[in-house]
Image 1 (cartoon, rainbow, N blue to C red):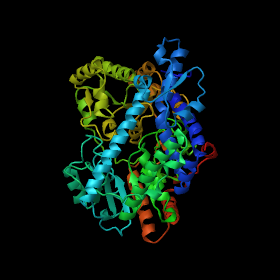
Image 2 (image 1 turned 45 degrees about the vertical axis):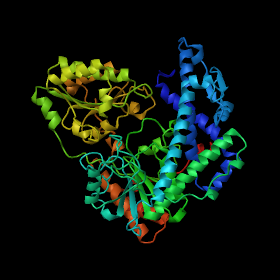
Image 3 (image 1 turned 90 degrees about the vertical axis):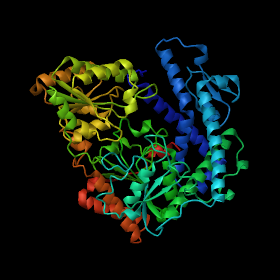
Image 4 (image 1 turned 60 degrees about the vertical axis):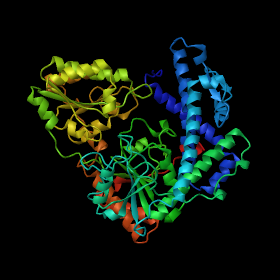
Length: 618
């Protein structure tokens, strides 16, 4: 589905959802419970937390409305039952109803337990989420009480040591993507690093294996589990925060409307979470919390927990994981990717995408591409060339499906074009690096069969065990790389000296890559892109601009030396040393910024400010 301008409809849905989120949050902020909550939590990130939560609740209904509009605009028939947006009568949906201005989309409010609500997919999802959330909280509360009776848990060690906490997310395998890529050259003693595990393995969805725990201990890092069941054979051995006194919560009596009752419930969840993380920081003397992930509300909470301790608090820090597809205004409340105090980024270019500063970043530190990808590995390229390939192309894909920017059909067409070419042309070789094995395996059967045919030629190779492996390992030595959308994998390949082009399925014409090289660096037409690569393969001197990023490579990565992780680690060490020397939070960041500017340049540290456009929305 496309907008009138031809871009993917999901981008329009994100923008509409943002506008409604601001409208609702403005009204919530004027209520008595919200004002009381703001007094209890003096941090401007409370607004950010509510935008994220409100956006998550209303998003399915905005999406349905946008789809109805698309059907009407394109003259498509639509069943009467699907021609209206049905809202349940509880929580903040009354506020959404008051803000509603999509006159061509009817809105109907129904009782939560009515037949209409049960039949409606969006309502069912909201109800199911609420029921599962309540059930999970009840069971979790009972388990925690039992575990506390057993007097089990973790006893902190070396709590007087200023500590860097690291959220276990990508693992500790140093030859793959990992959570500690910043550590090796940092000069930080391993005893000052605490790895905390609060979720099962993102790869297997199972508890973290004991073998991984032994590896962490062998490296002399400390570790702690924050939930039951996240480590193999863990039992009740996990750290628990003391209970938050009832006086610290919002009183139900302050709420008079359904919206205010929702504020009280959401606010009390927030207060409990903040209490958890403040207790965790204090007990383990954590001054830096490094989170490799993004896109979760708990990261906002972790930042707030530091904010409340003011000059005695620490910093939530994170890294840029992927390239920026759209500016910040599209994603406020959708993915709080960067609710960090300090954000390590590839280049100064990221500042343009952070405006308005919706996620309240404080400092951008330019470190270059952060992965240790500069270990040359020619194996895949050599294999396909050994079987006759003269011109080798690396293919990067992305996640695809019904509710993503990248439809499965488009991804299938992408693969079909290159696989067919490789089968029919004995001089063509392909190296395929799927983003995730399941994204490749979920392609249509005809594409998987076509891949098998191409693979049997010996000139098509797929990176094995691709989860967590570096994209540059697939692109090294090849003649051209191709990525989907604003592909981070392709940018890694470009940073390593490979030529490459983007295939923009979303048709996002306002992206700066179009200005840099429409028809040479980025394409929105698959056939034209394949034709351009074929022409380049046959006559490379006729168009030297194809895939040549040399005029802009500094905009992608000003360093291009693979030492981004080292720069991150040294910066974190400077923060720790400042805290150990008695500096306050403000003094620590000023000290680290000064040293970093002296070593790498004044333009490599950018102080961010929340702009008026964001502030005025509240």
